[in-house]
Image (cartoon, rainbow, N blue to C red):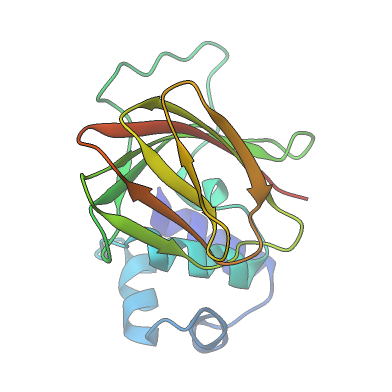
Length: 176
């Protein structure tokens, strides 16, 4: 699924493997393995490819959703970070009419996930479900408790830091 989506978006953008790898800051061999279906990409790699292609992360990790869909707790395709104890599970991807994605993110106690800016004009909405979280723009993070809501521009460097065990949140990404 990821392999076909990356190849489809690369071809749609009219880019060679070499050019996409250069724009995303990813090794050409990594991209080649990914498109062949033999790679296991990290969150960072997929975000970099999405930014380089000008598409939301979700377009690289989902197939069209059925009319009624249930994702049980603990199910769904989890993508782990290679830089922190952080995992994201995409629950719902936006469409061409509503460019937003819905995730559950899990952050290990004390883990810090530093994220680069996403597509220009993107906005993140975050609701903490359990634990405590420090999140937001890298230069102005905010401490959050369960039930707290935060929104910020996602096209700048930002961070997520778990301040308690078993921290998880619901994240909605809006894309222009």
